[in-house]
Length: 278
Image 1 (cartoon, helix red, strand yellow):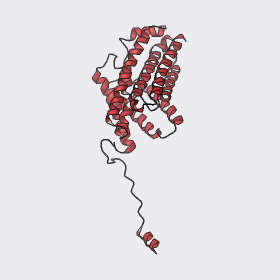
Image 2 (cartoon, rainbow, N blue to C red):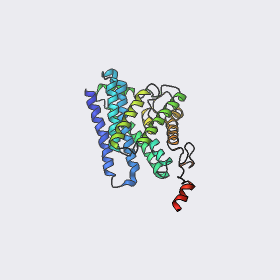
Image 3 (cartoon, helix red, strand yellow):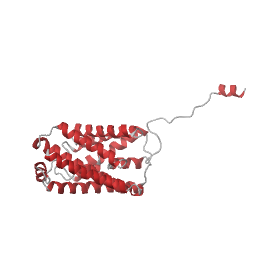
Image 4 (cartoon, rainbow, N blue to C red):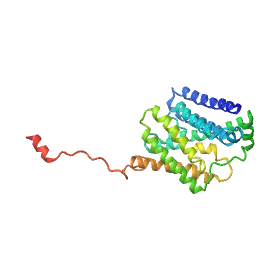
């Protein structure tokens, strides 16, 4: 329990940081990319601790998979509630750009902020582990340099896993975006938890380029290019396919609808026109 108490304090610190940034930036919406930085920082920092509980806590602390899944769900739910529209996910930012809902400069700044937040979250987590507050964190500190990669299959299999999971996620996300937050937020958290658990033996289904950068890119086993193909190109491909299936086209690239027929205007038959004139 002492390990979980230390983890709880760590989670609260990350949540307070993100909430504080959101509160300070309410008056300056132009600096929304800073909120993306805080959102990515919180998500990566918390997921790194969840990863620690999964890797070490399940066998050293006697924590079952049900506990780790519950913790992950609560983290994802809290992240969505605290950060709101700031997803901390580059694919969602690029999605808005492809839908003509965002311009180039804000998109670039948001994505850069997300990767910066992920990198600083990794540094903060490493420092936190180095304090060795519990036995679990002491073991994790010894494992930092030789961490286990999340990519447990070939690059091709990993690419398709991330692509398919991202496709499912974005299709559901696009269909739920006009729903009430009370419905949308818990459903998305459940979906992300389910996909991550299902793909645990493949890629862990991060579906988030900045999140995967903070969680597994520093682990040995694959090159940067191989990781990028799986965790960057895979989600971006899945996101683009989801947008194409949802709208029939990608507005930023081409306007013509390739999949669905455009609705034609209702034409009044000639006979009805003649009757109206009479």
